[in-house]
Length: 377
Image 1 (cartoon, rainbow, N blue to C red):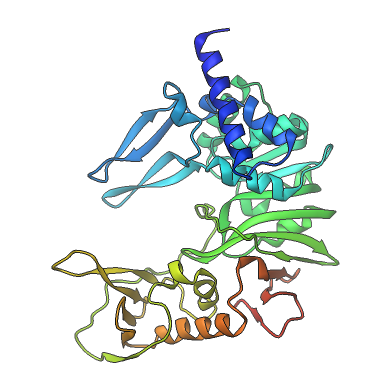
Image 2 (cartoon, rainbow, N blue to C red; image 1 turned 120 degrees about the vertical axis):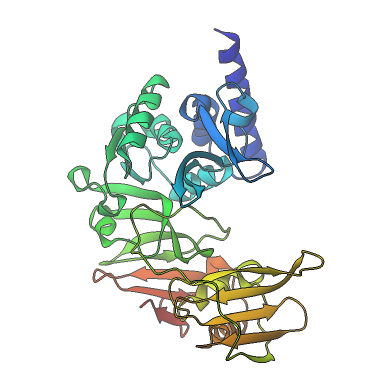
């Protein structure tokens, strides 16, 4: 056994112990998987931003502390205009094992993973269930080929396929569990069609940026139904996955503005994330949002919303006022905040989702027959 062999196993065991001690990892089987899967072979390179915002490459195979850290590791970039953006990553191990624990995988079950990425999650599943029970798809053929090679080098051979994750993998269905390590605005009904009668799906439903969470769906008759998870999580959007929506341009605030008081939090995506999620039921697609800095202190002074049709809103972080132009955007924030407040300010785990065979999605609070329920348009 080489020094590197000894070192990586010690790092992997420390990671597994830390996840167990933090309460993220509960079962002996997943502790064993995290301890024994060589993450450094599956994520040998990563990228991080330096102080200038430029992405620099990290040799994680030679930096075992980084390879077995509890942090997300960005593993692939793509150029958009004049800058690069992450398109693939190895998710935070604490989130990965929480999802695997929620999925409640049992011996002998078949699992379909949507979003192969580096292959690390597929390796954990294969360690737990065996290669022949694990199937994984990703849209990038080159990415899948690399993951397959690295998995084989680590001793795992689950079936990997380069395909659109929204289509699932019908030729190997039915699956007892489907886990998506990417976000979707709607749950594809094709996944339900490929699910065993007592199966379950765990997926990150995001109606917009930062607006959504993991939802654990089960078959209930001819529908999918279940609650969102209590702790918030976020994944990159499935590729190609979502229809193209026009992006909002910087708002022209020179004319047509009006200022009024507001009781809604200025930054709901941070201060009231469930309300921000509900607000997407009324807000237009393609909305841009962010912070406006004070020119003297360079600290956030207001938040801004901009819609593709030119409508905009500016909410001061102090003073409880909002200034708008065009179609009122902030009224959707206020509607959602009032609704959330009247329902007792529910956390994520009180929210649920029903998906019909027609593709219709319904959001509800507490139970499907609740008075608080809304269909997604």
